[in-house]
Image 1 (cartoon, rainbow, N blue to C red):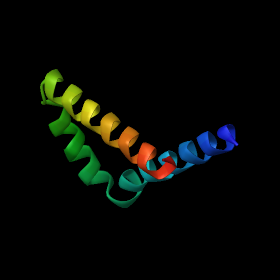
Image 2: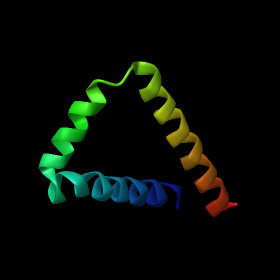
Image 3: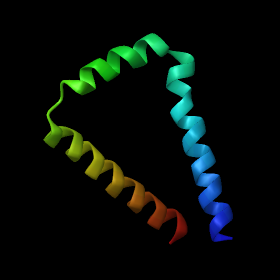
Image 4: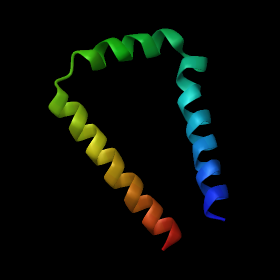
Length: 63
């Protein structure tokens, strides 16, 4: 069951990641140009918050 869950999560990730370039490619390009200007510490902070929120959500759903 673990592999099925992992593959389902990966499939959902790919669907969600593909939404922005499909729906608004110009907006995605503008957003990426702004992200390039952010300091590494801000990007790391966003990454950390995202990982923690994802782990907490997974813990809550599976708990």
